[in-house]
Image 1: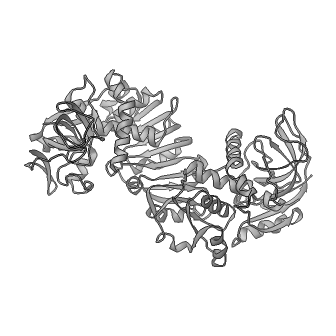
Image 2 (image 1 turned 90 degrees about the vertical axis):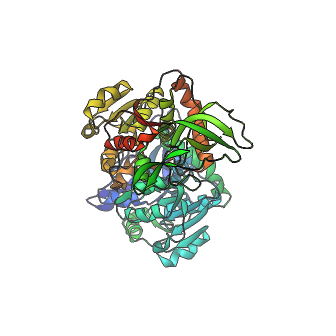
Image 3 (image 1 turned 135 degrees about the vertical axis):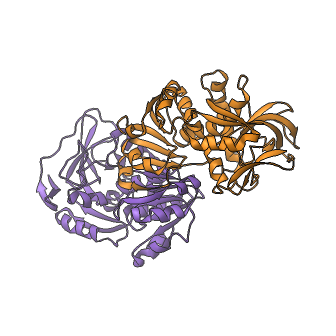
Amino acid sequence: MRAATVRDGEIVIEEHPDPTPGAGEVLVRVRAAGLNGADMMQRRGLYPAPAGSPQDIPGLELAGEVAALGSGTERFSPGERVMAIVGGGGQAELAVVHERQLMPVPEGLSWPQAGGVPETFTTAHDALFSQARLRLGERLLVHGGAGGVGTAAIQIAAAAGARVSATVRNEALREQVQALGAEALAPEGFQQAGPYDVILELVGAPNLAGNLAALAQRGRIVVIGVGAGAKAELNLLALMGKRASIHGSTLRARPLEDKAIAARRVEREVLPLLSCGKVSVPVAATFPLDQAPAAYDRFAAGGKLGKIVLMM
Amino acid sequence: MRAATVRDGEIVIEEHPDPTPGAGEVLVRVRAAGLNGADMMQRRGLYPAPAGSPQDIPGLELAGEVAALGSGTERFSPGERVMAIVGGGGQAELAVVHERQLMPVPEGLSWPQAGGVPETFTTAHDALFSQARLRLGERLLVHGGAGGVGTAAIQIAAAAGARVSATVRNEALREQVQALGAEALAPEGFQQAGPYDVILELVGAPNLAGNLAALAQRGRIVVIGVGAGAKAELNLLALMGKRASIHGSTLRARPLEDKAIAARRVEREVLPLLSCGKVSVPVAATFPLDQAPAAYDRFAAGGKLGKIVLMM
């Protein structure tokens, strides 16, 4: 099979041996695989894949058809449309995934859309509901509202009855973010529009002091992206006075059982919203696998709305 | 009535009008009232009492007998032994408390012990179980294990099946802390003895970096005291990598319903342990109300095991 491959800080397309599914695993013929911030870090050699995942093939999510079944599998049949988060190796023509991590692809979702669902919606759902325990009527701020996770978070939070604001650096995208269900703010204006019960931090340390100042009593900050910096001063007395909490989270390093639980929650709470069209998957651009280097450059350039997806 | 009173950074004993209980409130003839770190701050003019509480009479906890009932009360009868956390005004001969904040005093608990129970055990129970969701088998570190909240936290965590370590600055007290159910550590040695699932921070900012380094995957830090400093650098990437969380909490500013819920939990989960003697209330010293200034000086000097209690 061919796969996007990390070689000395560059992405190249290389031939790899076809993987074979073990017990409980499914071989997926990949049709689409979304790009994520972690891929940019892995290209630079900064974010190694967890043990058990391909080390040199990036890709944290994929959608495709069941090509073969390992022993003891029972959830899917050959030819079914499936999607999943994976520890790595998603940007390849074939990938092996444990069946407990797989989700069915809802009817009506195109391959580019399906390839952009697993990482973004699982990350957003886990951060908002499993970590921050967002409730209807609460006020949510999403820092970085135009990206893959941001557009997913805005839509599922609005669907759950939260009142959503989002910072969007690129002014040209604010109207589209607004259409997803959020009040779109310039990054420098977010404090005035608070207080917020939950803040989803996709940008990083520079926002921390402002986040704490703009947080409501008993507010929760969930940090899942630190591209703009990781170290910030924290005022513990302010945290106490607001009875607030700060949560850090990642999906990639989780063990199988945690990823499977997250997948079951997305199946139950998010896939119905995708099926009925209440929630959409904005795809900024697709690139064929051969043009993976260009896809990475497009992702790294920023300023897009939604996902960049590789098509196999 | 006479009461400890804050005047220009000093504690004096002054005469105040007797309070009268309103609807749902109980007049308590105070027998004993524990001192807490917040009293030291209030003496210095730094920690004003919440609205609705006496502004110039310190005291966050009390135990005594029901002296009179306001309209609509139903939980207690005159003469019954009761105790409670209050927003302020506990260090007086009489105090008015909403009946939903009151708890019965278990038989066998002396007045000095009862006066030291409400703030410390409610704070410890709330931080460990309501905030950090401590589970049996988990490893807990208490920073500041010899104080009122520290000794309470060690005992109820051990009773719940957690494995407890505690830092104790005063070497002479380590054996007594060990007897409460904790491995007693010098403050500089806590990182080597980890990792910990939960860390209860009663000291402050200087510990934050070490706490995060010594935290287990999915660990929780609860900050309820910052006497040694409030501002610290936080590494958000480390927080993400451990899928950890940092919670700030205080009891004093909570609304009635939250304090009442905390009291019901202590009644259900802690009072039975005090009744049967599985958990004790170490009292370092008692002072009559007239000697409140000396009691404050003793508290501020530190190096004690358990509570300093004023007796009325």
